[in-house]
Amino acid sequence: MKRLLCLFSAFVILLATLMSVNTAPATAGALTVSSVQPILAEANVRNKADDKLAEIGDLIDLNNSSVRSFLELKGFYPVLATKIVNNSPYGNVEEILDIPGLSDRQKARLEANLDKFTVTEPTEAFVYGQNNVNNGNYD
Image (tube, rainbow, N blue to C red):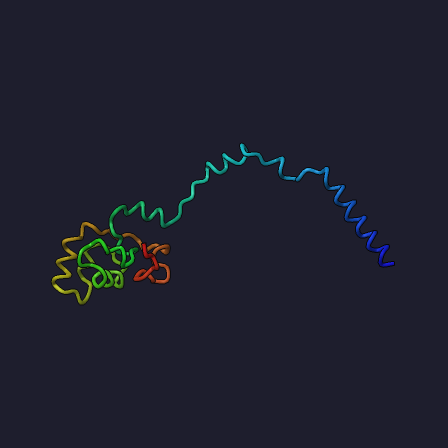
């Protein structure tokens, strides 16, 4: 009886395989390279971070920058940069001069570099979780 059941199972599998050989896949004929390319060519992927970076250009956004953004400014990294980041958000660039605990030297350094800063609305893509002191970007 077991042998008969095994033979019957093998026959059913063989029959199912033979029946499916002559059938074409349902979607393979519908999709061609020419029908897919226009869809891919029209896709324009942008996100909030890209839009914000395009908006600010080469300036440092005081409300959306990490401490590492101040590396190129002499005398800012890490102490003064940390004070700036920890006291954000700012309504305008000049508000950084009102940070409590700034020395005269730090205020002079800030005043000399005000033209390198900008202020925009905080964007979640940059300040999510308030970890803009160390956002894990080590380029």
